[in-house]
Image (cartoon, rainbow, N blue to C red; front, side):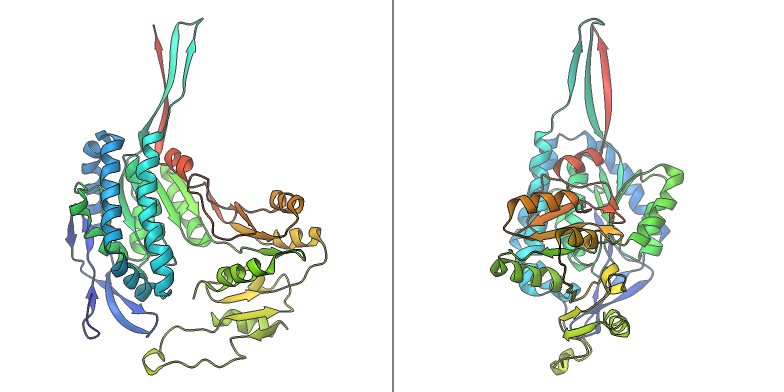
Length: 433
């Protein structure tokens, strides 16, 4: 992509072509701490151009059949898959996750997102009812909404961007998307494949930049009737406020503080490896210091063990996996989402106590329950205030089913049926005969 001495410079993708920006943001390689990429610092002007392109493309794109749109999505999936290794290497360098994780999870899932919605959009049905007394036939029809504003986060860059783009365009909408300014490279790489995939100009427009400038310009634009956002609860509150005057459709997938409830009859051979992966998958030192100040005990990791790095990684954003015990429920480490390899371990005596403590946070995105007692698994899952509960497994997804959180973890759901309903408007048609 670039040599160590040459910065990679990204450009916005608007109306089927790459467009330079007047100002840029530095993007850092997390493993070295060095600037390696420059990302457009887009604002109202760039967003206006992207929305205009999306509006111009909407009439033709929305009139295409689901099968025609499906063909293009499948072709894009094929192209990404053919270049999977380059995408995985770029995702690892840009985001900081391991190459193995990007190679086996992020990029394959991005490919699958495209193929899944390319298929599911072909199998939607409408409702129909005949009213004999009135001599009328009633049926429903779903139509695309228009220009979709899509804002995705830094932790799963291409994975979550395609999770939004795929259903949006499969349903006939056009798109103005904004990836995180910290992890924009794979989105830019995907844009380079649109022409070959047969994507008409203006159907997908990608504007790079910060949430406060580019993101807010998308949210506030009167010609963007729906917003799908994944990110922090605080940002979602602002999106809700800014969208309210326009009565926009919102799908907000927000933060989580996901509890893992491990009962004494759990199969530890499965539970321990999965819990380690779920706790340490992301790459926050202030939280650990606060926990120590509150009287918590650091079993291993930050502040206890030493970390040895090679010369080229001395400025990198590395942190030892850290386990905290003897911590209070009201501690920030127990209440706030920590995007780092830090986990808190606390003991409980009863099922009721475990449920109460798991529900004692403002979030409700996901939870895991580990137990060999089938009755307990069902009972606890019903009472946990989480949009998704994994039992005796973790991160197993069926994209047909809803994904989304309760409480401060979001508004709305995403999945085959839910995404289809979000990215379309339903109308009832009555015909007297």
